[in-house]
Image (tube, rainbow, N blue to C red; front, side, top):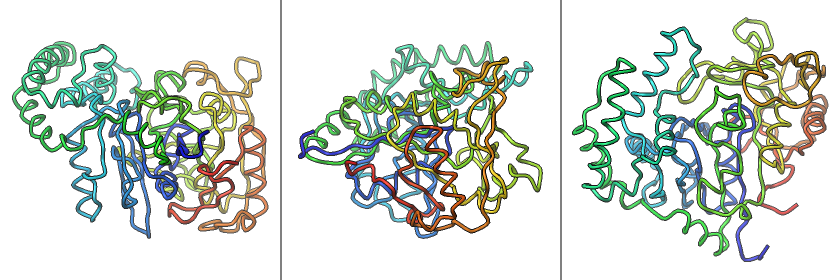
Length: 443
């Protein structure tokens, strides 16, 4: 690699999202000059705690909390301009400069009000029909990606051409209003309201529109370090997750290239973020799930000590033991270079820990998570028992200061998954972090 070029790191979730990616992106941004979102939309929820102050981000890259850092929204993101400006207003209210540092790809598909209406009506329809809800956030993410794949989406660049935008909008709205009113028994969406709102936001967005692909490649050639921030988690990936209980985009590391317009050779280090236990929000199979609502149980401990509530929806997260067989699948499809273990401190005080190393599936043993919800729902976890610890790990910043049992737990995760632990997070605060191998430094 030419020494004058930058080094780039991809941060991805390895479970079902909510692994603590926001904190790590914010922390690693100290070594970067640019942070890039490459998929998802405002269904992401990244919480950062800086000097005890909590900030929740949904759409804008977490690097925005570091002054002077360029932030990019790549073409793989579906964009709600309404939500973008709400988030900008919240950040500006606490003194964060956003508009001069944020670049938005002109190729981003737009999320419009009828997408959210479709999303909500479909979930209601599933429930009415007696089917299990997928557990979407209701933000319109899936319907927006459907329009993209069907090659009928309105994109950010269309906002620069009012007549073209209006023509495409009429065609698209006719289709979706027909579905809303005829099939989903929901009210129609008004054209004039949608158009006026879009044109209002267009004027504010124009200064931030950019050829993000070109800007990222130019920055790399100039020596900038770039950090690619994934949303959701590997097991919510549309291809590799617990299908159909998944999101509508590719959450895996390889999509950092396609979702931002850089070549795969520019992705130098893949950091997988994983909690020291497992959680998931919404429907779908969860092999190691515990009774997390029953006081006095390990699952309840994880839920309460870990404050397991969804950032976007406020729903309680289901909790369970660490699943190393699941992580093996994530390591395989992402090509993980190293792991970051978050929320280790949540396990403080548990006398015994269980570590899932594989499953029994239809009478046979497998050491890796199967593909798709149908097979995963029949998996019975095979556990290894490990000693817990009573000492507090909150705020520990040196590996040797961790309790011996905590170090053994981390070593078993490394051994079973085959991926080295590079970083350990011991609280939500950006400074409570143990660095074993810095992703921006060649090993």
